[in-house]
Amino acid sequence: MMLVNYNSKKLARAAIGSPLDYTETSLFGPQFRPDGTLAVVYRPTIQGLGGREWFGQITMRDGLIVGVK
Image 1: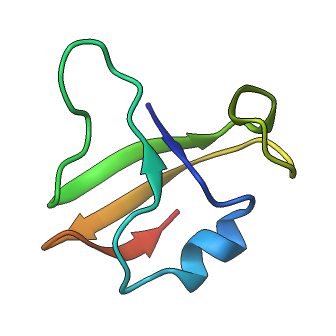
Image 2: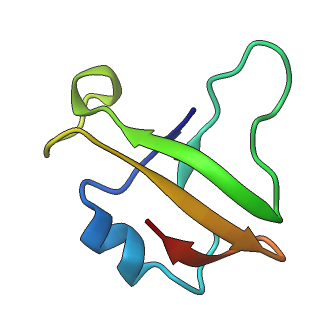
């Protein structure tokens, strides 16, 4: 699960067509893939940011966001 830096799914949807704003957390190599579906989470208490916690899926194509569920 990747940490994303959008305080809501609405903001993540507004970023469709842009590169993903995320924080890499894995100790075993990069989690980011420029193509495919990524499981993501926004955890404000861990990230030190405001907003509410949310989970979702972001679909990437050629390094750009094409969908948010």
